[in-house]
Image (cartoon, rainbow over all chains, first blue to last red; front, side, top):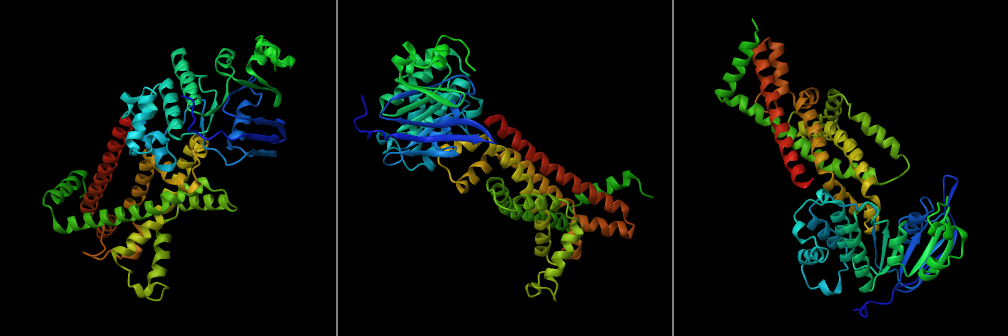
Length: 243
Length: 234
């Protein structure tokens, strides 16, 4: 069911966006356009500026130069972090919390009371039996699924994920990747960082490759993995460290 | 001759006889200090949280001032309130001097900086952890305050207890603004001062033991609540 009821995803435009912190250039002026409902993977070695670029795009950080803008109305966004930040409350209360602060709800759940909406999200992500548990005592994989359930309730048009699986075991990684695909099927654009090549091959429609704070490529996934245009990306794919 | 034996037996006799004057003193002590801590908390918790979240010129001055006020001598606080409330003072018409209300006001002034300064620290630490997530959810700083206060609740319980400890232990402020009037503004600490100066040391020590027992009990209850909740919520 591709989301014909969802409005088309707004285009994100970065125009010469740069970020300098205490005299260090962490991101060189970068221009790019993210168009349509794609799954974009941001790749690159540690310290390349992947998380930074994502935070600038999401609006958590303000660029020191250039502009970040959405064509048309700013879409509903959500972000899932490497280490999920959950409130010191039960799993269920973590979800009713975002429903209370956010007016928007998923259209298919709109008619339900908040608690029922939250329960349906818990069920969707396989967490219903943990509803009453304090979120902080859940396992790493369960916590990340709870963070995804929270994002699900926000009904985002764009979902940012920052290395969401880097601390998880294979089964939990699979659950997160399935969730990412589920978001995408329901009409949510995906922007995700990872340093895991296999994961990128499984999920990417297109790839942004960063190296030393510089955007070297923005390529469709097939091209990127078979014939990357930059030598750094080639070395990265072959598993040779690039610094 | 004073021995700890007769101090304890005096204390015990006082408690067991349910002496009505003593009960009045104990109840007034609790009322004044608990009321002061409640009012101070209502102001200081949001104030401390706001101070943790907002950056403004002079913020460091405010923080240093609050930290310094944690050590405000009770007699100085008492004196200031005395000057405010005395007949010739700006609030003299209210006729509050030598009433329990005046004692509450003085203790609020003593307790408020403690709760505000420690709340600021706790909330700032928690905000460091939550900031990105809460920003991502689009929360305003104003809306973050209740979230952070609630999620810091276990630590803040200890903060409020520290405030209560200060209020229940101090004698200088309530002595000056309350006047230690028998049956009206006499509390445990002022009674202890009075009995000591009269040479009635067993009585003074007995009151001291009761005060200590009460404070211990309140702390124990708070500790148990905190531990139970922590175990359940992780």
